[in-house]
Image (tube, rainbow, N blue to C red; front, side, top):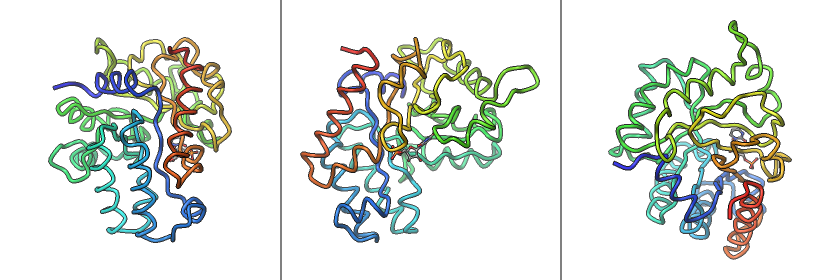
Length: 278
Ligand SMILES: O=c1ccn([C@@H]2O[C@H](COP(=O)(O)O)[C@@H](O)[C@H]2O)c(=O)[nH]1
């Protein structure tokens, strides 16, 4: 079975280094002329799928905006995931799950087991209960060619007080997360399947990312103020592993499909240049 790291590597080569989020904020629904209800949600997500599902390497539905509408919203999420995968996009579900290991096992089954209705290519996970507590996710991901992106240095300003705090051995919390992920990815080719989330807004990370051997998801571009040029400051020599992620910046161009595609294309061009890819 092909690993998530290998599938991501190929998708980025074929479609460009870009992840687009599906974040149906109430303000965006209004801007698109849609009602803030399940029907508006379905139309919004469907329009993004139709415009970008066969064009963008990775699409990242933000689960919270679907969960907002209860079981009907989750049903829209399930069908959005299915449609995206049919169009060839890798689906990274932004759910930021984490718990004690026995419960993480159930989260892993929910998202990384191919028999689940919510099966996706990769998920985001929170390491607050310890990176080791996420082991059931890593194991199921390895078994079925899935991926996990673990929060390390998040794009929000509040994250730094926890993530840059120094642990007993002198490393920052973020560095310990990176180091544990690096061990999981050791030896994987062309890229490991366990990624880290490092915001494009964070400036110099103070972390050594050189042994990561896995994808670095970079949210915070556009609406949160970071630009593609900031990626160089944040990631330095690790730029080739960076997967830049935009939500509102691209979604704000909708609902016209051509305008959505043009916004995504602009983002890819900017990111290619920043990442120094041809
Ligand atoms: O550190 C993080 C981790 C996740 N996110 C998520 O990414 C998108 C960002 O949306 P924009 O509209 O591009 O600001 C959103 O779903 C966040 O929950 C993040 O921003 N930072």
